[in-house]
Length: 330
Image (cartoon, rainbow, N blue to C red; front, side):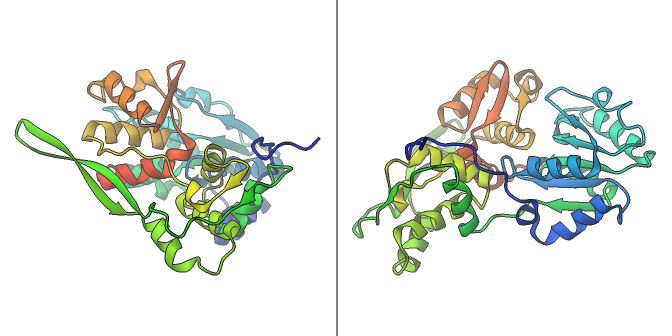
């Protein structure tokens, strides 16, 4: 039975060669036994790491270990016994606090003495942090990264979820969505004021000058690929939240706060972005005014909080990444 344009169904997984691009050959060498040592599969939240790790489990007939918030070395120790193993969400092996690298250090000690193929999955932002502060990349002879997908592949994967196509409609050439307004805090000592600042939307502006000869469908998916940074999970979430029976290019946008985050909010958001799922209790003591910070991030549509677990909103990942990087939070 056909589903309506607004109702999604699960499409097939992204093929691993597409996800890994130039790194696919190195990954195949690991699976075939031509390369030794542990391998790290690194990718953004929702970008398809699971599909790559699924392939490793099947090809290696490996034991799979899935880590959750709060898990430590005991979840792994004893299960690395000489047979192939795949360990996903290794970003849960550290915390951003004093003594927060103990589980990670114990895990790396275990890896050093294991004579088996071990494939590990890591969040990209956690990996970058750990490379900077712990030189983590030295422990993995092979690192493969999830690539940004092309506009054509994003369109194929998103539309594969639907039995009926929406109508693609061109934007009004007189549209006024080239300008977006964000609020910035200006202050001195104990005084501050929030000032609206108009800015040119770079994606919309690029579309205005380069999309004149393209069909509305092509313009729409070009914009979707751009605002999602080629991340299929993020692109799907944006599409789900924005499209209806008719779709215009200007419908495709990343949810974003119209205000600057303060330092504590940006720091908290970066942790959530890097961990993907984090216990609220883990944030206590390292984020000042945690309840208020999480409340503001949730109201801004950047995180969700349920049963004590904080997660990034998939469609807002690009905004969360840009905001924290603008604040120079590693």
